[in-house]
Length: 163
Image (cartoon, rainbow, N blue to C red; front, side):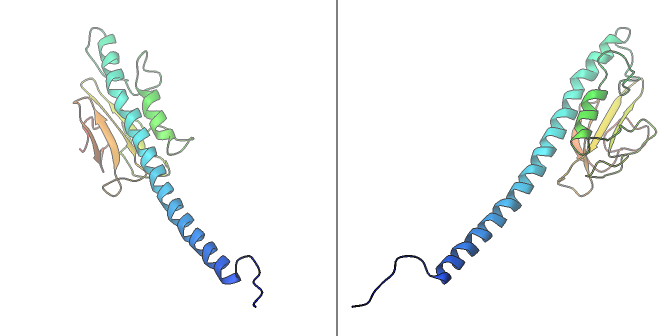
């Protein structure tokens, strides 16, 4: 009669460890994608909420006459600077908001130009880079016309997304 000892062989243990390693790498890869998509959703939400705030600003400027200075932190009550800056801080906590003369420059790490806001008397537009955009090198842009879209450009002094 053979004598059997209880337990697992070394090969069985190595196979189990290998399977666990493969499964954990798949899960971690999926988590990074989900994290990027979550950041993008937060950016889109913050910047889209600025639209209603800008309308409050417009209404508070002499009976609805101008969007001028809606992007500035010193622009008075109801400016949209906090929302756009909060969206940019998702990329980088030390980000600064680009002004009218700053064109959009894509950077998922939050470098200069990756979050900009332009305003004039007749309109405004703001864009923030996305971490995982559908179109390469694009950000989420909203403007006073009601547009909210992914685009690769917001030229200096422009108050319309994609131009």
